[in-house]
Length: 482
Length: 95
Image (cartoon, rainbow over all chains, first blue to last red; front, side, top):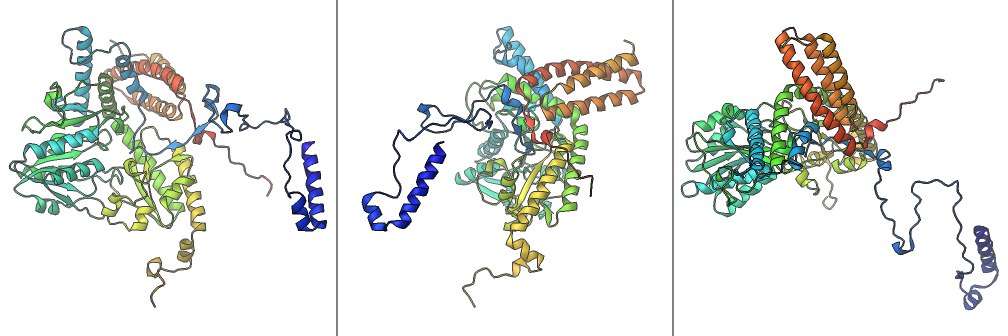
């Protein structure tokens, strides 16, 4: 009723505007007339109107629409994206959670309390967990130190060893493709007066042993090389590196194995590793816990970062989080048991993903060594911007690089170190496949990726030029010269 | 202890499968169903009675853990994934 009325008035107004001269019109009244409160009438929506988004704000809400509170009933209607970012973190295995729950409820004792049963049972649980972690990497339980994660372990190992030997040795070697926390610890040491060598990698992401041997100096105290790269899945030849470093006395070998432990077979004695970093949440355990392997024979001495009660051989003071330690222990136990089965599954899924994408999309480049860890597939789609691809894939949780740098639009430094061109580094996507990924998910992802890549390329003028046979690199984009 | 009977193994397999299917989360449900099938195929193809006995008792222990995990997962999990909501592809019959 109200709408008919307003349409009639506006028609009348437009008629009068056409007939009456403008001056006169303005003098007497405005073109747009204010309507009084008496003319306004609230029209209720018909009872048949059913829109989920319909929401009537209360008077104290100032007109803003609030998110509806989550209710039990609405749980089923919302769909969640497929998780394909296992290098960032993995879901907690339900069996791990089951092992942790008693220590989050009734068995809350401090594992360092020696005077009562609450302490004893917690200590027993922590020691069992330590044994499981040690078994997974072929170490002795006494070599394992629980920390808050791989970042803390990396800091502890690199800064600890370098600072302990700073009187005589002032040189540390690492690679350009390390994780941010290793590179940043080394930068900090550089500020303190240490010499840091950042080894380059070959185009497949593997370091060259000759370069490493050349870089070793008499005053080198530590070499830090990661086992599996977090962005490309490249596996470094750890046994060969370990054997090479064994020949040089007094050079300690640290490896960041956060992405490797529980996924590929790792043995500290085979690899001749002196220090190793392990992360709980990369092997289906809880976040906030990690472990350090610190060799006792021959003894590795390092300066602890935290000072305090002298727990964990004095290397990491502070009360152990019993539940988290039990979690990483159970995760390690399951990983050891399931590693072969998981590896077959992940290998098959990875092959399926790569083959299907390669069959239907051209100009796709796989970054990093082909023989790397199959659960980490880094693909570059030429002529498509990686971030816009991610935006278009709302049903898939993917990343273009490591989670630490996912907020910035800078191309990944790891891919640049591999020698990838800037445009290829910008168009990369990392697919992380894990224990809980299914074949149906891979098929779904492949279908969406193919559709989106084709759609984005249709829009791209670069793609049009490539189709016409123009070499993109030969174009002089700046038109100032000539 | 003697080797478990064929009937006992099948009954354990059935309860493991049923428990695995009761997980609300898509990924966990599929994983545990796949794992149960795999484990019991291994038991089926095993000929050494001592190995069968140890695999059987391990599977029985796992079932207790799985039962508790499934309950916790039903309490807190259960968002549907995008892959579960796919509509079946329709093709035109008359062309």
